[in-house]
Length: 325
Image (cartoon, rainbow, N blue to C red; front, side):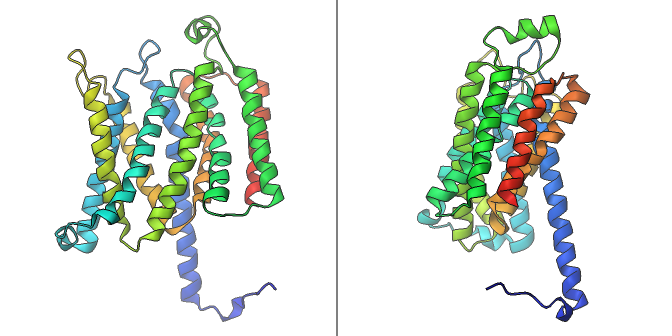
């Protein structure tokens, strides 16, 4: 039985609050799409002679540190300093170490993958996160999927295969780019990294949403628990790989600092979505950011998009429609 709400009994104040809430969620969604879609092109802009000039681990550490500082400031402004006086129980804090480990791995994979593929290839293939996340939702959280949603997952897999087959480059991508100009390409190692990245990403999203919603704590305090582990893990990683020939901030430019600010903001916005919304919104962001990525890659990098590229893009769009309708 379907219950139909009586819209005539709604007060103007309630309708106004609902519209304000929708507008705020729309702004949040738009910001996340823009930040997510611009990440790969911005990393490509930092490359010198085809190589990323900065230490990826130090960049991830700065992102985690930025999120921790913002969360601390937010907690003090909303709850006061009393929220930080009593040490939290170990059993409450321990679950946040797992997503910190997973996100640390994924953040480093994002930077590493850019050396083995172009930005648009990364953006299209990263849509496989929709399939991995949905599968984990189904098996780990007991979420039942409709037949049309399983069909959508199959379309996403086919889109990834089509794109990989059309753009797989087992040769030297630097040489090819020098001879023919920037074009879509991906190496076999890049394809493997994408698959690992998508599986870890889905697991991190499902686990984080469950932890955030299972504890009735302020989101800023939960973010502090999460990012303390993130700073510690990425700090050990970044400082262990620094040698005497390269300093911690070597290779940093204005674009790198923009990347840090954007990814820190995106992480904080995503925690709002997982706490008060659903991980499905995260999947929407992944799909919609593909268009932003393609436009920025064309405008900023002069990337040449082949006609065959439209096939996996169209399949991904159809899959998103079937899954979310």
